[in-house]
Amino acid sequence: MSIKVRYFASLKERVGRAEDQVEFTMNVTVSDIWQQVNQDKALPENILAAVNMEYVGFDHAVNDGDEVAFFPPVTGG
Amino acid sequence: MIVKIVSESFDPWQEIQAFQHSAQAMRGKVGATSVFVGTMRDFNEGDAIKGMTLEHYPGMTEKQLCNIITAVMEKWQVIDVLVVHRVGDIFPDDPIVLVAVWSSHRGDAFDSSRSIMEALKSKAPFWKKEILASDDQRWVDKNSDGYLKKD
Image (tube, rainbow over all chains, first blue to last red; front, side, top):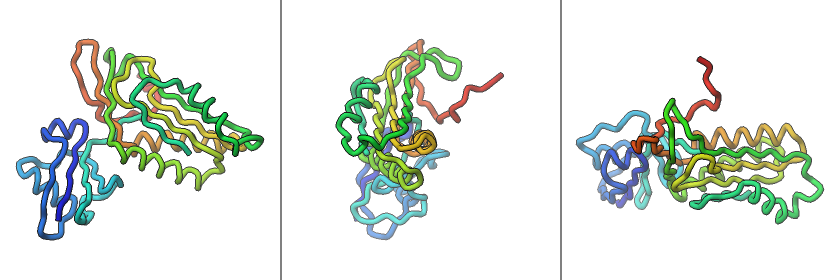
């Protein structure tokens, strides 16, 4: 299955990319995806995750075609 | 309900007037309008700030704001809601956010607008990067609780 991974704000600068396109042959969670695409880096503290633009926990199962996003705490308003 | 993300400077008072004039359903029903406008300060965390850039997650921002407003409209008796939020390059005194709520009674207006604003602060995916007077840049890592701290 094909998953689009996006990064925002300080995390985007830290990983050095705005997005990744990844392929998996087995079932994966949000946490698995971070591990796969950022093997050399531990997940920074306080990072939030969203799947298809809704907040999820890191154990959330991801499906083919999902958009997964990782970002730091939000600071709007 | 209208949610607008804008990349150019906006006038919150014009936005409110235009919205009221076009909302026929509110005629005769509104007894209370609560308005919150957030503007940019020229100081933060003890430093002079000369500008900032607001990044957002297009699509998720609108989705989360609509979720927030829908939840608030289920909890309080609200007639209509307008939220406008800036993105892009912002300078001191520029409006950043407008939350306006129209309802029949003040309790619903006050409580729902506060609730929208607090939820926006914790759930709407916007991120601020400040430009200091020295030209150094830094990401704002978290929002304050909204009160000036006493020493």
